[in-house]
Length: 260
Image (cartoon, rainbow, N blue to C red; front, top):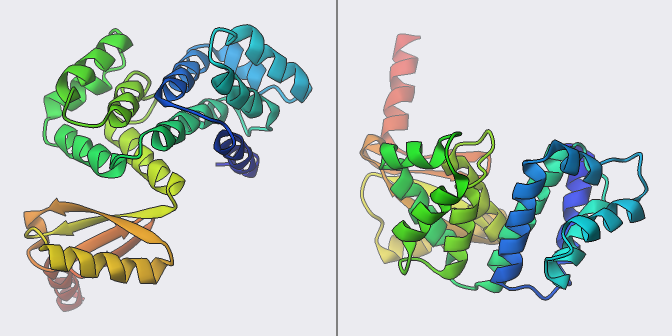
């Protein structure tokens, strides 16, 4: 991610923070991301730095005039920024849609999105169907609505059904994992994925959360994966940091030392 995109994302997120949004706004922003992602001419024009910012904002009104005033204001803010490239602009709109869903639905989106990610990981045929580059994108959204209807919050359903319709070059799980991080960031938290040989008790989970929060200086959401390959202990990943206290890691390290 280029420095221009980093700054553009921050400015656009600030604009979203000042807007009154609901889940319909999130749906509209996701639809705008799909429209821009499906048209290189549109995304290129919105990211075109040879045109002045007011002209790019005016283009939003012409193309997305049927959307709500809140969605149009956010998209105009996006168009006024300087993005590293058109693809980054499209991903930026998508990220704002995820943030809008997080603002509109104060349920446990991080946990629900994580559970959906695990469901997909455990069902290769489902992952293949959702990640296929060919086929009707809207039918993928319908499939998700059928699978998740009533089982997750409305916000989670909007995020998942929207992301599967335009995964781009990403795998669906990667798109969902990114969404989890965006939701956590919107709520001022970090996300830790914990691999453990056996389920943690409530007391263990609370102690781990407290320790990770103290280490990182911000509240940490713990997502737990029971993984028999861990053998014992735990392996924790927060962003790019990995804390590996598993027995399997120690055994591997021991084997490496003996072989050396």
